[in-house]
Length: 332
Image (tube, rainbow, N blue to C red):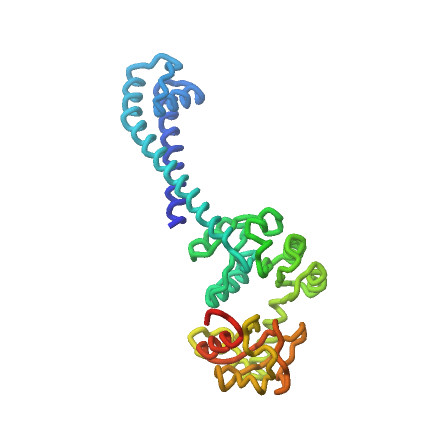
């Protein structure tokens, strides 16, 4: 809808330019006036401002002026009315978008809507994660809008733009630009505006990983390294690769892998893995536990759960929902 509105706006501007060009060319050919006089005469005729003619008109000039008044004035008023209406519509649309963005909290910010950013956005949409995209390119921003995504068109390394994206209340930020220097600046700006925000960044060059971590990125991912590892695993461990692909990237399959945080009202807090009977109660299988910043894989039966622990679990969606209730989430 917005795309067609912009096209209509541009079409009307072109018509307006064409109308003034037609009138100017007519007076130049018929009356042999210079460009400025011809343009001035066209403008005062079409806009009906009523100024005195710059030169006396010949009979042929009068006939052309009559035609220009009949055709041009109506067309001019129609175009101006449509342009005003479209401008108001665009401002209303932008206002609605900003009102939605202002209400965001505990959300994610995606910097860049290229191929990497689009994949991140699709994953967030699939998992119902609230997010906003910051995209410098007007074409990329429009592509995101057409897909129903909240977008801020601007430079993600700018403090003002990050504030528009509500960086102070954001849970995390994804630096998905192809340029490592830009991602470093974004991470640095984001950390300065929100000390607690979780920063994940893409890195094209191996040497950039340490710099991004120094400016606050928790995790730095190289697409080329990940791609190489996946290709090698597909050859050496094809069944494992197929299983992980189903669990992580196939939404139509019932089996999923998620992380669930133990919150205040959770009945699991203080219990051991053995006594909690999570598998029997929810059906989900606990694969690992992140406890006090330490990831414990294949946790032992005597592991005692604490407030804030993050459980990495495998199961069907309804099983994971039941586990979320056990973990203290109010909504399943």
